[in-house]
Amino acid sequence: VPLQASGGGLVQPGGSLRLSCAASQGTLSNYDMGWFRQAPGKEREFVATISWSGWSGRATYYVADSVKGRFTIFRDNGKNTVYLQMNSLKPEDTAVYYCAADRTRSSSADWYKYDYWGQGTLVTVSS
Image (cartoon, rainbow, N blue to C red):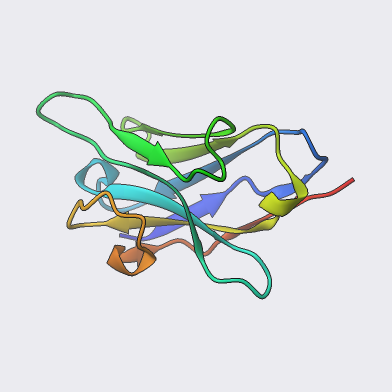
C-alpha cells in the first residue's frame, strides 16, 4: 500500500506539529500502523503504533517512553489517514519521521515487521 507522509517542518522547542500518513490505495484499517524516526547518525527508532478492530470499532495504541505524554497517534479511517500529534517538542525530537504499515497486525515496535513505508518527512526542532 503506497503511503504518503506529510506535515514535517521547522518548529521551536515547546511547539507542536501534526504529521499525517495517507494512503491513496488500499485500506489502512486493515493494517497496524506505526511511526518511526531516524535522526542523523542514529538508528531508526520506534515512536508509536496503532491497531484497529473492525469488530469492536476501537483502536488500541501505544507510544515509546521517550515521547509518552507528548505524542499521540490516532487514525481516521474515513479519511484513510493516520496521524501523529506531537506536542512539547524538544530538539532531540529532530529526525526524519516515517509511517509504516504492518499487514500481520503485530502491533510491533520492531521496524522490520512493517511491510510498507512512506517516504519520510523531516521534523526540525530548533530555536
